Image 1 (cartoon, rainbow, N blue to C red):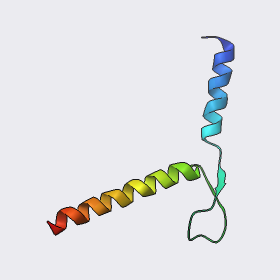
Image 2: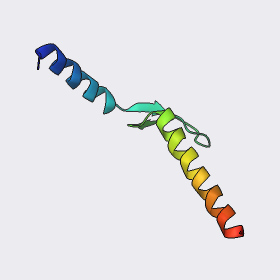
Image 3: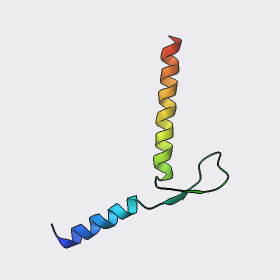
Length: 60
């Protein structure tokens, strides 16, 4: 593996671990988080869909 590629991969790994200031709905200020707002929004949307699906299956 070339040294350029190793340096690029190390830099990419450091970017993922960087904290970001993210303000979610309902919060009054920004909070430092490792996940980006887009990742958090996707996780919340998936959870919402799962709850809706469970509610539909319970109703029959």
